[in-house]
Amino acid sequence: VAAVLVAVVLVVWARYRIEDFQHRIGQAFAVMRPPRPWLRSVVPWQLGDWTLRILTIWFFLGAFGIDQSLRNALLVQVTLSLATLVPATPGGIGTEQAFLTVVLRGAARPSVLLAFSVGMRLTLTVVNVLVGIVAVGLTLGHVSLRRAVDDARAAQPPSDPAETGSSPKG
Image (tube, rainbow, N blue to C red; front, top):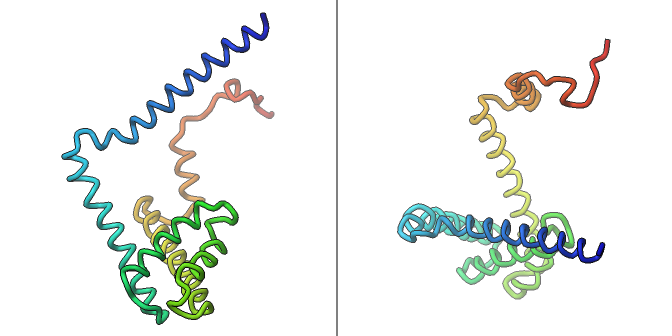
């Protein structure tokens, strides 16, 4: 009886989880229905993003004296994406450098390819951090994390000690 009860509970739980999963997948593709707004509002931004990515890689290739070709730029982009799929290191660091030296072998000396990979990663990280700080500053009107936390706490209504399970001291 216990095994049947556990099996029924598991089936109900799994059915709920599967339905929830299907609903979330449907939400992900909801932007594509109907296709005309998706083509008008999503595709141009994605094309712009990919164009800027490839252009950035193109200029990095030139800066490090590596042959600037569409093939090399696309190989670098694919390699950067694949490196994050292999969970050997955080952010694919190390894996990315190994992939690039193998994929672009012959385009430049391995030391140049390694310098390219590390230099590009470092530059992009620094730029992204700076852009993020500016975005936070523009959004909040300041860059102070302490002030943002204090503002958020001040905006919340005071909590009742009985609700939180703690008793007031005093």
